[in-house]
Image (cartoon, rainbow, N blue to C red; front, side, top):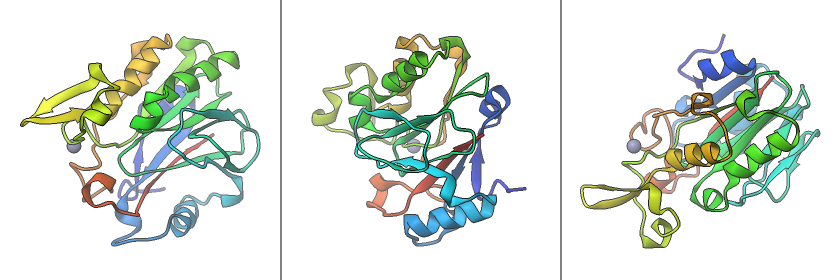
Length: 228
Ligand SMILES: [Zn+2]
């Protein structure tokens, strides 16, 4: 079995949905590795086939697409599928990876939620797409992965102006609560609070385990995976 050195796991999410969600840690590399090589290493570690992977190309949009085919999905930041063999894949380094699955084991979704996507309500769009496909709100379970936390994420007025309800003040710094925005978009979409499993793991508080773009503009990434 895969040890916790290499991956964050999401036990409650998996128990409720039957789906397996993982986020890789920096145990896969020291100073750096290309995302392509990292993907190969992660899939090899999990004994999974890269040919079954599907991923959004990630353009900081508010768009989520439904797909039943492997490979890149253009012009979006989130992918939803009902195809059992597909492995959803996402890369992040401060933004929030958002895992979604229903309790009947039919649909899975993986969403890239940074401030630009959240400004365009990407999490609401994903929840709506699930509803359109017939998933009742109370059967949709959501888990978030490690992201920059509400005390670490310094923002200026150019970003803060879009999120008046999610700005904090820490040591005279203005900060943004990405995980709080994810939660509130889900609540506004009618998802019960008990179905939303937020993590407190921060990519900048814990650089020994994760990577943070805000810290040093790193090219390294964490890979999140969601599979049946
Ligand atoms: Zn932090």
